[in-house]
Image 1 (spheres, rainbow, N blue to C red):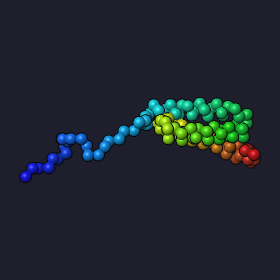
Image 2 (image 1 turned 60 degrees about the vertical axis):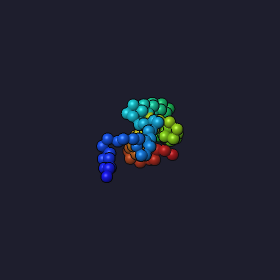
Image 3 (image 1 turned 30 degrees about the vertical axis):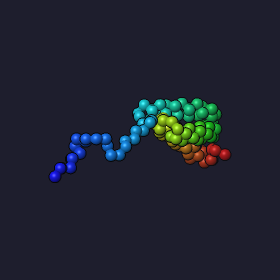
Image 4 (image 1 turned 135 degrees about the horizontal axis):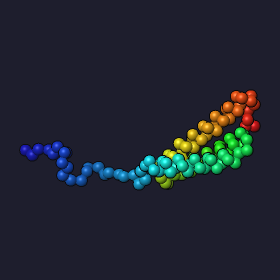
Length: 112
């Protein structure tokens, strides 16, 4: 009676196909996306002349960056999209903190 092979030394192709991701997430891609998002948010943030305009410009830049990240997730490099999303979330958090500090120190809501 023949013994069943242990599988340690496969004798043929795998029984299931192996799929490879066309654009694997790499550290370089995440860093590239983060750098691009940092520059994007910085350029838009510098357009603001006061806290309210800075916050609104940052929100506009953040929304457009997230739309870009969604497109990159679907059709492009997911690593770059990850970097864009992470840095954009951080940038929007900074803008929210600036608004909160201004609101706490002045007692007046700065966005209207």
